Length: 178
Image 1 (cartoon, rainbow, N blue to C red):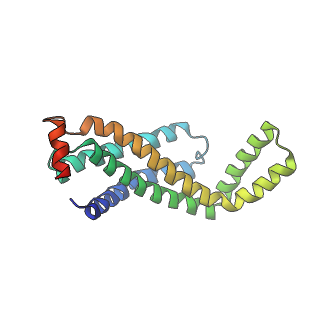
Image 2 (image 1 turned 120 degrees about the vertical axis):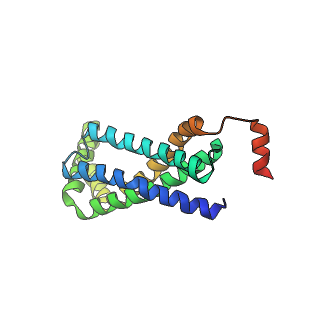
Image 3 (image 1 turned 90 degrees about the vertical axis):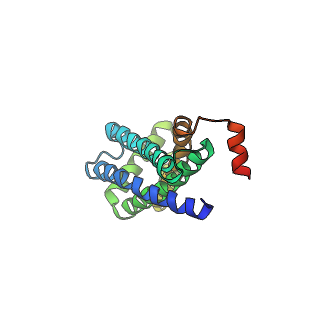
């Protein structure tokens, strides 16, 4: 499978894995539990991990014919996570761009943290004015980075369990080089 085809496959997998994550995100936002919903946060993480696991498993069984290396698992899982990060990041961007209530809740939390640390009020207000305009962008970038890094680690773990263990590892690696 060439690189372009793998990228298309990973994009499709990432889009499909984003659907349940968008549903959990919508539940968190509409229930008002975006900032302090620990149970929904755990569900979100479990859905993400299961999504990466099933992406790699499907890729191994259907696309690769039952045999896949750890490197292929990590590539597919990380590329799929990149697409998930783009979709979730875009959804967060839209939420924080157009929902003033959500933005104010996050800014209030940040303001309270800064005040509890002892940052002067004038500095906090200056930071808040800058943060208010950058909040949608920072949410997008944060979602993108956290999904890619999380996907990398989850892919490593899932790949360790799902990779092909039969045969000589050196011979399999040399097949990829040829």
